[in-house]
Length: 400
Picture 1: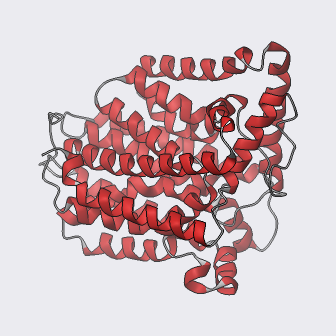
Picture 2: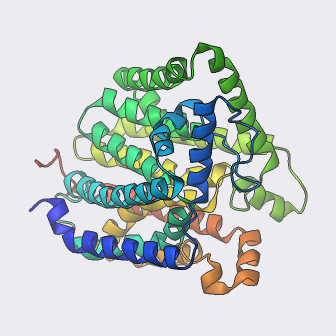
């Protein structure tokens, strides 16, 4: 039976819940999709030849800060009134969410669980519950993080299928949207996957050249210079209490320069390179695919702790969470289970609906979400190390 058929009860449940959430948002007059409005209005500005960067679209904080080529994907939306475009985007987010869980289960069953991972629907439901607070915010704002998760999972599947060029292109697209995802490319560099490099470079080149076609060569340079300035300004002005740097500020009780963030990123990159190099030297047919999954999913989960991001970006941990959950459903490991539950209590529950505005503000200041994610990262590494020793790991990919 195919994974999509086995997950059918979960997919139906997800569709019902997303529809109910949409109806509630509309009835309560809260179907705003504020982040989508930024993309929509910035795409309109690009079409009309007016400034794209340094302009507040919608709210005071509604600054567009992504690459100019990203707006080309939102230009079709501008042919519709914003409410209609918002509805289309909401449906696409729902489809992306369904595809994410199908891909996750397919990867885990074929390349880690040897087709024997139990309780497919239950694990999917629990995974959805783990991110539900973040997902509600994502759906309310109408951002594109579900699309980024989908790109990373498609790249993972391409890597495991030996399609390095496709994997590089998919990661290249994701990195062009969010440059800090370049961290995920380090394993491909260490493993000297030249075809993946070529795919990533082609994706980058295509994204850079797209604005040459529209709005044209005259506007190209100005758009990209403004984009770079926008990214630098975003990092200098905004803070996130869930980053390593901010946690260190709270611990020491004094401000720290922005260079500390760069130091943490560099340390993460070096650590990932050393880990990948070690795996490359020790890999065999039994562990290679498992290593490739971990080398992508664990750094993906680490990203929001390194750079200034919004709360919903912590959904990047979903693949790693599902990996840990699959491990726990297969092995009786009380230590990993205890750490996992502690991490989830912090990661999954930071919401004013649960704690009230005043207490949630305190939890934000404490960096509870980021701290929970750090515990989950430790749990992911522990589960990976223990599961890697399993002699029942598959020696070759399972057929579809």
